[in-house]
Amino acid sequence: MLPAQIPGMVKSIERLFVRYQYHILRICIAILFLWFGALKFFPGVSQAEELAIRSIGVLTFDLIPDAVSIKLLAFLEVSIGILLIGFREYRLTFWLLLFHMVCTITPLFLLQSITFRQFPFQLTLEGQYIVKNIVIICAAFMLLVAHRSEKSRATKVV
Image 1 (cartoon, rainbow, N blue to C red):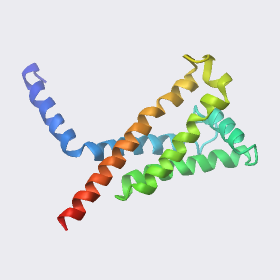
Image 2 (cartoon, rainbow, N blue to C red; image 1 turned 135 degrees about the vertical axis):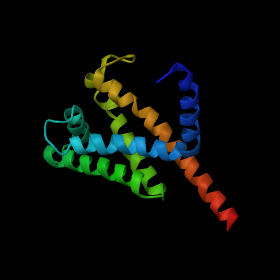
Image 3 (cartoon, one colour; image 1 turned 90 degrees about the horizontal axis):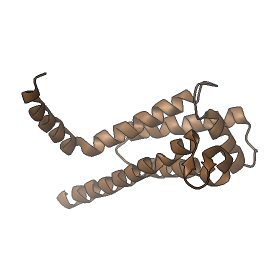
């Protein structure tokens, strides 16, 4: 590729993102949920498996066996990914995603020995993994606003 072609290519990508920004965002988040969720179906494959199992154990007072809890989490994550890609109606997906994100953030408060090297700023890798979910939460709210705006425009047109 020649340097002179780069600005035109950037403009084309920019137009694509302006036109399909919310669809692209939904697909990107869906890929994360599908990928990370699918890994949890296979014991020992997900790097977040131990953290997830310990978190679910704390949240459910260890009432759910570890092998079951990780499969339920995998099912939830894959389901959210499928809903993000396959269904135009977003409200149910949003609430499931928000529920999941709230649960994933709880180890910052309940399992600080795993999420912090030194509270409150020195996060472990697991803690960093959790904190990045703030971006997913913000993106989910952006998609909710876009969905409501789209529905509002659709009802005004009719």
